[in-house]
Length: 161
Image (cartoon, rainbow, N blue to C red):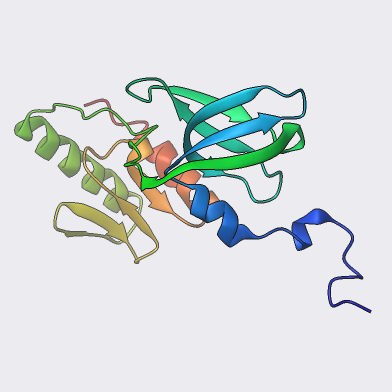
């Protein structure tokens, strides 16, 4: 009896390292309906085996090929392409005085509500659980605890600077 014989789902049989090796590579994907799709692999979902391709001259077009539609993946060359940062926030140009004013307002609000806020290198922290990076907006909060995160974001959304 084989070692994987009691696992029937393909997730237990696929090779995530193979999927990882596709990232950044130019590939040709043959689909079940015999369509050939080319592009650079941006990411692969190891569960659904879906592939996200960057297409176009500047690789500004994304295409998702669902795992169930993929018949074959061929790597075109061993050259790895540099992948662009997608889905990043556009840099916000804020005056330093406005940024300092907002930071002080955030510190004041948090301390008024009895949160032990500390500042280190322009990053505000609360008990090493939550961090707030400049420009100190609700979306700039980082926290693993979703309840704490929502509560602090709610406080920050009250600041009108």
